[in-house]
Image (tube, rainbow, N blue to C red; front, side, top):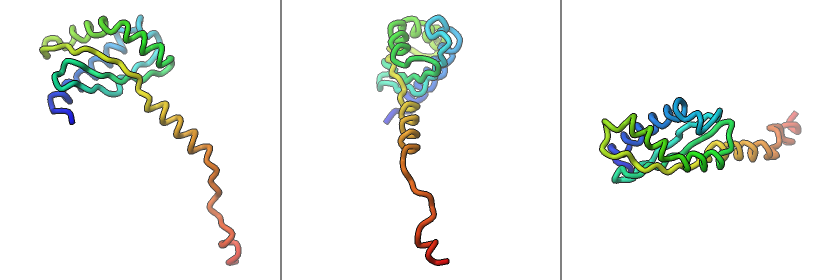
Length: 126
């Protein structure tokens, strides 16, 4: 379980990275909408595992691109939070697959062959 300090740090990083991706990283992400869905901090606060979700983009390509430019993203993060924290953590980016999972489950449920509510017994009682 994460400590209160890890949770506070994660919340701060999630908020700031969200703004960085919206405002400062247009050359990196283009027209894609990037959402920072989750941040998990290591106990020493030295590593942040960041889950990203994308709209209008290929997840794999964009994760690779962001990962290649993570030093820039980290530098921008440092400018924003450097005065309030001692360590700017190493950033590790992962795709958030929860929306893909939700779409998959919608399809599975939609494909189920569920008979309607009427039964033969009700018809026989009349």
